[in-house]
Amino acid sequence: RPRRRKSEKAVTSDILDALLAACGGDRLVEIRDRALLLAAFASGGRRRSEVASLRVEQLVEQEPVPVDPARPDAGALPCLRIRLGRTKTTDTDEDGFVLLVGRPVLALRAWLERAGIAEGAVFRGIDRWGHVERRALSAQSVNLILKRRIARAGLDPARFSAHGLRSGFLTETARRGIPLPEAMQQSQHRSVSQAARYYNDAERELGRAARLVT
Image 1 (cartoon, helix red, strand yellow):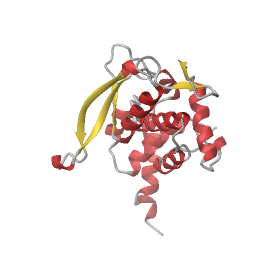
Image 2 (tube, rainbow, N blue to C red):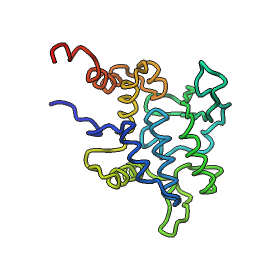
Image 3 (cartoon, one colour):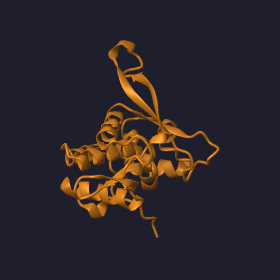
Image 4 (cartoon, rainbow, N blue to C red):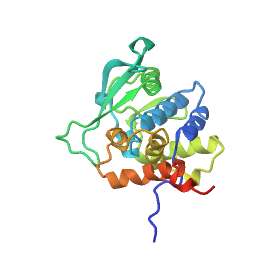
């Protein structure tokens, strides 16, 4: 039997834009969900368990990076380092990290400031009165947040899961011509074959080999 993907549809940048528009207000829950979606996608498509367990202590401020490395005078973008610690593909003795640059950094800062979070869990529940809870979101809650925003964007929640952020990140890097090794530095995939499944599908659809006779 063919192996089923954890998310039928990948959350690529066009879908991510629709999700962000679906939480484009100024309520606390919308600010949180924007930060969560942007940070999860831009940091390499982090797993929902990694998003749920992310702590302020893992965030390290970096010097701003150039908008265009070839043009130092073109301005700079805010940058954060996320220390990963132990994940499914790293060990605690490895100094694994990924970077956040630009809009995801601003969204994350806005959430932490508005929620008054200076330590502990980054992404937390919000009760029905709009109060931020002390406990972290669960991995299942991360998945439900994504599905809720998918529904509000007018898409089918049954076709998406939080893993779509991970597959979507790799699909998007392929579409933009980013080399697979560079994409894997951010996604932290250890297996080239596993990462290449998403990457190659997108690359083949955009490539010339399938268009010899059109």
